[in-house]
Length: 212
Image 1 (tube, rainbow, N blue to C red):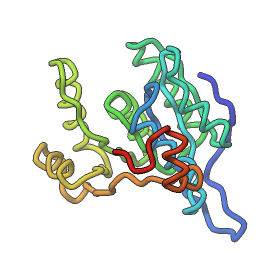
Image 2 (image 1 turned 30 degrees about the horizontal axis):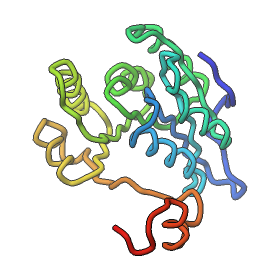
Image 3 (image 1 turned 180 degrees about the horizontal axis):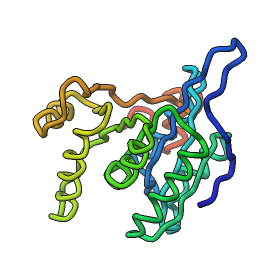
Image 4 (image 1 turned 180 degrees about the vertical axis):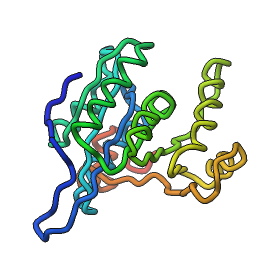
C-alpha cells in the first residue's frame, strides 16, 4: 500500500473550532467512468460542506487504473493506493484495516461491488458506519450478474444506501434494502471551468454555426 498524503487522524476541527466529520471513500477505479467522476467530485467538494475526505483506491496496477487517484492527489486530496492482484482479498482487507486504524474515519463510503463486498465489512467490524452509493447495474454475463446480485444482498447490512435515481431506489427496495436506509441523491455535476459560449464551442469543435 502506498499513501501520498498520510493523515494520522481526520477527527480535526476547523478555524471556528467545529469538529470536522471525516469520510473515507473507497473504490476500485477503472480507467474512466461515472463512478470515478462522482468520487472525485465528492472528495474535492468535501471541505465546502465542512467535511474532510480521503480516498483509498484498490488497483491491480494496470495501466490507467490510477488516473482518478492521480488527479485527486494533484488536487491535494489525501490518497492511499492499495495495489493487489485481482483475487488478493485478504491482503486487500488487511490494508483497509490498517488504513482505518491510522485514519480513524467517522464514515466509510464505498463505491462499486468489489469494495462493497470485500472492504465494507472491515469497517463495520471496527465500529465505523458504512455508506454506499449504488451507481447502477450493467448486467451482462452471468458472472457479473451474480456479483451484482450479491452486492445488492450486501446492501441490506449498510447503515445507508444512496441511489442516484428513484427507479434505482425502487429496485433496491424490491431486492430487500430497508426503505429507511435508502436515500435518493441524483448525481451532481460541477463545471471545471466556465463553459464556452455557443459560437466559441462550435468553432472549437469544427461544427457549422447552424448545423446539427
